Structures are given as C-alpha cells and as structure tokens.
Length: 242
Length: 242
DNA sequence: GAGTGGTCTAGACCACCCG
DNA sequence: GGGTGGTCTAGACCACTCG
Image (cartoon, rainbow over all chains, first blue to last red; front, side, top):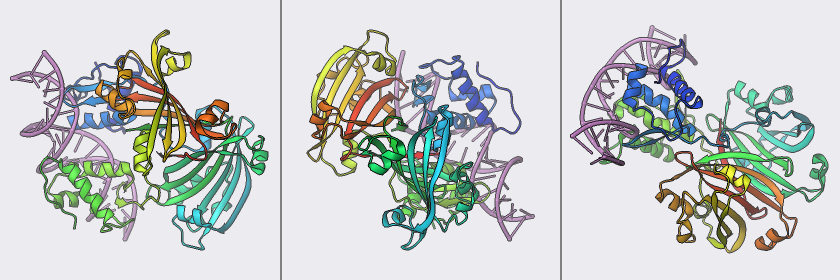
C-alpha cells in the first residue's frame, strides 16, 4: 500500500512522514485505522525501522497519529479546529486568516528600562530599552495597541531599520537571536480613555490584554510586550497538549 | 565531568536526560556553555550515541538546550517565566499556583446538542449531550462560570459519577478516552446581568471568555466548554514555540 | 505465544561550521 | 581539515497487549 519514490536532497524520514501524511489526507488511511507495523513499513519503504520511527514521531507530535504500546500505531480523528500551537506574529496570523494587516508606528524611542520590563528582559538596572508603540489594523479596523520593549544592547541598530515592511523578529534573527518561544499572559481589562480613542471603542469596553516575553533560541529574552486588543474584533486561539 | 550510576527499571536515555538536567539546575553547566559532544557523552555514559541523542531531544523540546548544526549543543539561558505549554484543568493549575480551588455544580442535565456544540463535538443532529454548569472559586472567591458539554453516547454514565471529588477528565480516561489536547479561543467580553451576579462583579465588567474543544488521544472530541472568567481575578498563561 | 512498539547498539557516511 | 550534529543501518532484546 504505502510506498514512495526517492527524492534527492530530502531526508528519508521526511519523505516517509510526508508520504504518510498524504495517505491520511487522501483518505487512503482512515481515522481509527491501524497503520502497518513499523517492521512492515520499514520493509515497504526499504529503510531501517529507526528511520520509520523518526518519520512517525513528527506526526505523533502533530496529533495526526497516536501509538499504543504493544498494540499499534493508529490514525487519529481529524480535528475540526486547526492547530494553533505555534508562535506567530500579527502579520503571519493575518495572512493565515486572509485578513489585510496594517501597522502604524506611534512611538519609537530609547529609554532606561522600568523595573518590570528590566526584570522580564533580564537587564541590569539602568540598561536601555528600545520602545516601539504601534497601532495595528485588520481590514482597515484598528484592533491592537502594541507596546514592545527590546534590549538596546542586543539590537543597537534596530531603530535604523524599516520596522513597517519587515517584522522585528526578522531583524532579531539576522542579528543572531532567532525568535524561538514566547510566554504570554492573558487578561480581560477595561479600555481607559486614551486606549479607547486609539481603538475607536468606548471607554470601559472590554479588551483582551496580553503580556508577552519572547525568547530567542538560546533562551535570551529579546522582547517584552504589552498588548491591548479590541474585545469585539479580536480573538486568540491556542492549542495545548498534555 | 558528567556521569551517572545505573538505575534499575528506568531507561538509560531518561537517566541521561535527568543527569544533564541536574547538572544544569546545579549550575555545574552554565547558560551559554557548550555541552560535551554527543560522541564524548556517549563514551562518558557508556552508551551509544543514539541513546544520548534521545535523552537530549527531550531537553531540546523543553528549551533547556539548543543545538547548532556543525557547532555543538548549548545550555539555554534560564527562562524567567515558567513553562505553561501543557494542558491542565482548573484544579491542576490551582494546585500548581498554591490556590485553594472549589467547585459548585449549578446544572447537570442531558439534552439534545445545539448546532454549534454538535459541530464542535462531531455529533449527528439530535445526538444528546451532557451539560454540566459549574461555578469555580479560588481561595473562596468565585472566578469562573464553566459550561461543559460532553457527548452522551461516549460517556452515558458520567452523571452517575462524583463530579466534585474527581475531575471529568479522569473518568474520560477510565472510559477509554484519555484527554490529550485542546484548542481554545479567547476573547474579552462584558459580563451580562446573570453572569455578573454569579461572579459577584458589576454588570458590564470585563471577563475573559474562553471557548474550548478538548480531544482524546485518538482525536475524538470529548468536551466543549464555554467559560467566563473574572477579568480582575483570573489570568491565563501559555507558552508557544516556533 | 505472537505481534506490537520501546529501547539500545556499534558502527557508517553526510552536511555544516570554523579556523 | 577537524569537529560537530544529522541521518541511517541491520540488527538485538525488552515490555506490553491480546486472544
């Protein structure tokens, strides 16, 4: 049943993974059904069992397959809701949702870090941070006020870059700090007078407040943000696993 | 430097993983520092290189280590904020945060699924769902109104169980549907009259609204919930990776 | 007992990075 | 060129589940 033609330059386990994914997407392998055993798959694909396992393990992480020790590997039921476990920025999310994203820079400045921000970014007292405040719109409607703080010493030239046409995470990667993970805390808060004007809502209207620390691959905190989202125009979706 | 004594009944790669974790926690391996190469570690631990890699790969997922191809494996900077990427329920979270959790059942009934709920739970028209509405408190203060809907056909005896002293997810596991992942959507909403009374807040106050679909290991949706959280007493923390 | 996944070996060659 | 991680092999034995 499952087989594949070898492709130059792509690892075998990735080819096996994609071959299995295609079988599932094409409904040639159905939810609940048992996959051939690892030994069988190894024989069919002409690889060793460890290679098959490596391909399968990616699909386990994605929740497309699940295993039962001593029993077999099975195709999971398709999830109605898509996967949202990956970190993405406003523009990436907008693209995925077919929303037209726009951004206006309200403030960009360099100043000493306040206590909370310094702590989140693992800075010394008196260290400088770059503060970039933006207003973000989806399909022409303002939805988010975003206050980002970035350690000046890590990215001293950041304010010389074009912050509208490229995302700051791109620059961070170029400067040797590829963005890897973020911890975000969510609350519901009332909009105050100033915020409500920026978002075009009434004072006291509910907003989704998000505080986020972003870490590079090596664990260095590279960005701390306060973020206020219009309650009636913005929702955030995340996937969690046990 | 790193070494270990063999333990019965625990896999070697798990022992290696924990040995490395301890070295890092004890600051004998410092952030930014390079780990010995995989070959060296294999020699030191007296195992093959693949076994070392299996141990390391868990720590990569956790963000405790990171790798650079052709260069080495490194200890990541410690993250100030703890990891919150795992799915947990109200009681597990409360325990972790040293908060006293309590729950009162407001409604428990069986009724036909409404359209949206039936869709989320992959039900046929007319299928029954169990509806359990609860009020949850932290340290004696009401914080959450929780409406859970569960497919009746999967768990016909659920309402015969003690829903206060054991969590529903425990029963789901016992009935063959271990809870594995959840997709949740978050919004900020105003409390209406009825909700505000239950939560002891003013009408119009902001609440963190959460809609969640919970899936078992095999991908079957087992629970759909509406959940209203007091904005001033509740925050939700999640970790995301790229 | 037969079949499955879980762990592990002792090698091998390749791709990448650096001095 | 030398050192690193990335991929892969062709086996082996163990632990678990089921009939």
